[in-house]
Image (cartoon, rainbow, N blue to C red):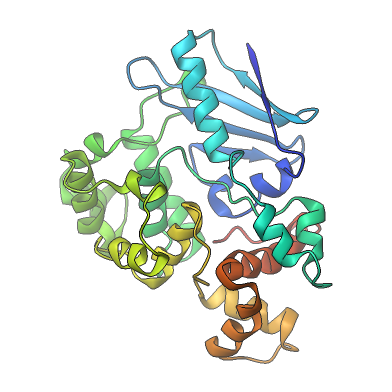
Amino acid sequence: MEISIPTPSNFSFKRTAISHGWYDLPPFELKQETWTLTRVIDPGRTRPVTVEVEKGNRAVIVSVSRSVGRLVIDKIVRDVRHMLRLDDDMKAFYDAVAHDPDFSWIASSGAGRLLRAPTVFEDLVKMICTTNCSWALTDKMVNGLVNALGRESSGGRRAFPTAKSMAVMPERFYRDEVRAGYRAPYLKELAERVASEEVDVESWLTSELPATELKREMKQIKGVGDYAAENMLKLVGRYDGLALDSWVRGKFARIRNGARKTSDKKIARYYSRFGEWRGLALWCDMTRDWLEDEQQPVKW
């Protein structure tokens, strides 16, 4: 069965799907030959379902792996809209970059929507798995979690594990099987706190706290420092933080500073003219060539 979901006039499916490395981590999979984004969605009470999302005519077309009822269809639509940021109002951002010759391409190409998981919990687990390691290790950790704990959909694909399924696993599982290293106790504790409702990470999506205070709240989660928190802010719609790491610093040096090493202060000054949108302007700037370069780095 197929579901058609209308998209905003300024939406770019390709730019959103490839906006950062989540497309390469299960339960996502992106086939760039056909620009098909596959995802396993877990409705909870029924078996997980695999969906394939493709660009349509002012819509995205969602192909569902099996017949499902109305409640599951509604869940699929909600999750796809959330993942592709279809309800995000990009006008203020596009207005901020429209008259800058180096950044006006963002609005004209429909860039700026950052792919995210259906839940903040999944995004947060994955973000912790990106810290202080190579992308290959991140990929290994996330695959380990999904393959071991995710509920199975058709074709053998698996959903992302729930907090409850992660909470019951011992710390040694994260250390020895997931190969999470120092992150093992952090993943265990996060899952326990979310499963017990001690913390509500989903509330970050609608928090009215200023970005600085919300970042401070995020950093109360063990394993979340400035880098992870500022990237998480982007996934809940706050773009004040730059989330600088070695890859961003190196890319900025190559494209904006004549390949010369530069300071974080200089990078911050360069994007400061975009105010509350500076983090998103930076990320679009760093990834502009990803649709032009077949060897685009898979990276946050």
